[in-house]
Image (cartoon, helix red, strand yellow):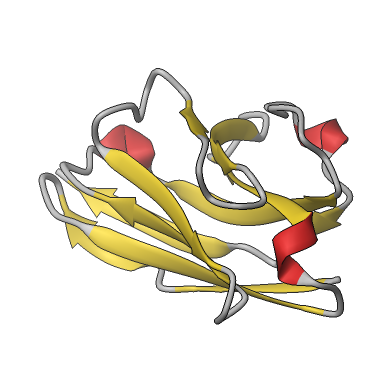
Length: 124
C-alpha cells in the first residue's frame, strides 16, 4: 500500500488547511485510515482515525471540534480538514493505514502503512 500526502503549507493562526492522502496498492475500502503528526523534538501523536466505510470517526482531544477526517472510497483518498489552526498544530502530518481493522486504533505502532508526511506550519 502506498500513501501520498499533499496539502500542507504555511497558514496564519485561525486559518484553515485541507490535507489529502491518496492511496494505492490495495482496495481502499478495506483500509482503516488515520492521521498522525510529529512536531520537532516530540513523539508522533494521534490526530484522527476513520473507519473503513467512513461512518465512524475518532479524534484526539486537542483537535476535537476543529479538525474533520473524511474519506472518499471512490477516489481512494482520505482528507483532514483543519480549521481554527493554532501555532501548536505546527508539525509534519502523516497519514497511516491498516488493512481490515474494525477496531479504533490510536497508536502509531498499530498502523502498517505510512505516507512520507506533509509539513503544516501555523504562524502566530
